[in-house]
Image (cartoon, rainbow, N blue to C red):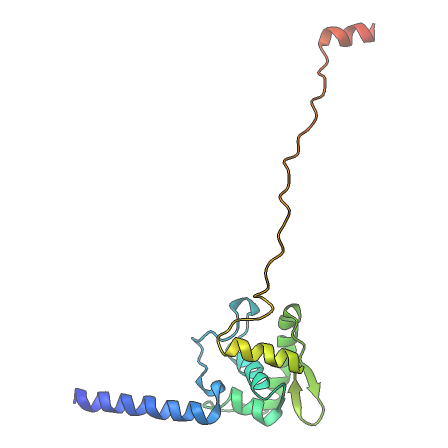
Amino acid sequence: MSETIAEMRERIEELEAELAYSNGVISTLTEHELVFPLHWNLGLTETRILAAMAQKGGTASMEAIITAVYWMRDEPDRPEEVIKVTVARMRRKLVSHAIEIKAVTGVGYGIDRRTALRLKAVLAGEGDPLERRKPCRKKKEKPTVLPELPLFDREKRDDVAA
């Protein structure tokens, strides 16, 4: 019995690998895998949309995005509306990371070629090229030394007041 279960698990892994190969990296994404940097705060759906655009060289059709997002799940009644709302949320999150998502009329959504290459590097596990730049060296601040101010004796103050 345990041999049969082991064989079945092995076959499942083989089929999942074939499916991943035929659909690309997107199909292998799960909720537990980290693909883009954590500080981008992307959810699974957002990650799949961004990965679809990167893999398609920048512009992904609405059909490709829907396939990437719902590849093994039930689609909602109007998946295009869900994608539109998700992309709007992604735009707010990614603007600070120099990623701009544009609507491509009659096609879907896209990013510029340079950003697509950057995201492909991230997907390949090479890290974000923009975040790998050497940080600027900050000049060491010298401790501020306050000049010593003369202290007045009470006797001197009394003399001045008189």
